[in-house]
Amino acid sequence: MSFSKDFLWGAASAAHQIEGGYLDDGKGPGIWDHFEHEEGRIEFGENADVSCDHYHHMKEDIALMKQIGLKSYRFSVSWPRVMPEGIGKVNEKGLKFYSDLVDELKSAGIEPMVTLFHWNLPMALYEKGGWKNPEIVDWFAEYVEVVVKCLGDRVKYWMTFNEYQMFVGLGYQIGAMAPFENNDIKTMLDISVNVFKSHGRAVSVIRKYSKLDAKIGMAPTGNVWVPKDDTPDEVEKCRKKSFAIDPYGFLMGNAWWADPIFLGHFPEGSEEAFGDMLPKLTKEEWDEIAQPLDFYGFNVYEGTVRYPLDPNNYGPYEYQGSAHTMMGWSVTPRVLYYAPKFFYERYHKPIMITENGMAGMDWKALDGKVHDYQRIDFTNRYLLELERAIDDGIEVIGYQHWSIMDNFEWCHGYKMRFGLIYVDYETMERTLKDSAYWYKEVIATNGESLHKH
Image (spheres, rainbow, N blue to C red):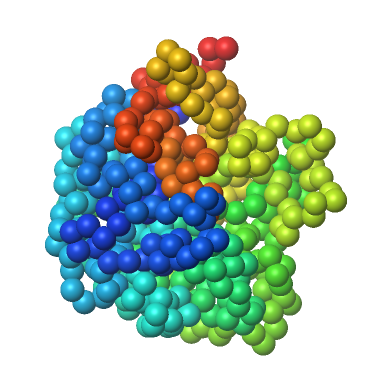
């Protein structure tokens, strides 16, 4: 079986991480623009004011994507670039940037995939309560309508949110990402419901205004446990752990975000975990939240992550001397078999790997090239496991490598390099890494070259 003939080989990015153009052409500030300028938030005091300057290098970057042979490209739209105040006035220059981006992709033969929210909430809306304010359901719908009316005649693939676990869990509970807040469980449950409703309303808006047969999903992440072996008992243990609910770490899990959207109810164990704090929703609210979606997107880098982490304990796939990337994430290729398997069997939707990749120790060598063998080996191992999932009957429709280029890695600043394209942040020169040429062959052979070792 292996990869289908129309498999969506691609790469991904996020607006705030690559665009720069901080306040160019009428863009408003988002929460990341604001908080990353505060002392101590970002490593080395860096910010994304310029980043990769993709806002001014868009055509050059898409030419490189075409050279790699991408079939698809997942990017996000910056809400504050399109609507500087979050609602009301539309910034036509900002909207035109994305329209031109889509046109450029289409002319290069690359399928555009739009993520509507990748973390950078307009600062004006944050000051009105942001995700704590139930009005955000209407605010988000207004923004989505503007974007879909503009791009919906050319964009087929849509994702509502990127990584609920991070922008809600780390942003509002743990305080490790913008807006760096620490809130109680009741507040986090209410925020979750506002996000669920915003997702549902966005799906309604996309269906209403898209001129194409829209394919809609989302792009969560989450902890997936990889069994020590493939015996049924071990697999079931890890399946249960991967969808478990607990009163503290629930925001980092899979079931909390996916069960309401795909199954129309809170996950099993929610009432026991939260009691009277668990929000009560009407049938009409559940119907909007749980509208049918077309695929399950998933951002996946490693498996078997304990949360909260216990520094005195190794997990089943973290042991003394185990392999880690520059981010400190464990190298566990089998997660790209088990994650699609678990999600497909639970939610019965085609799987899209919306992010997968690694931060490497990359630099330009004396010969002017970037020899990132470890990224090639990492990606090869993970893709072989994805192929195994497909061969076992799991419907996987695409793979988006993270990321298309080195970029601003949130609180890590520019220290971590995830890209297929090397970016010199002083000169803005782009260089295709060895992994980009390797990935070009993978795409051209539709995965057959993965077996050349």
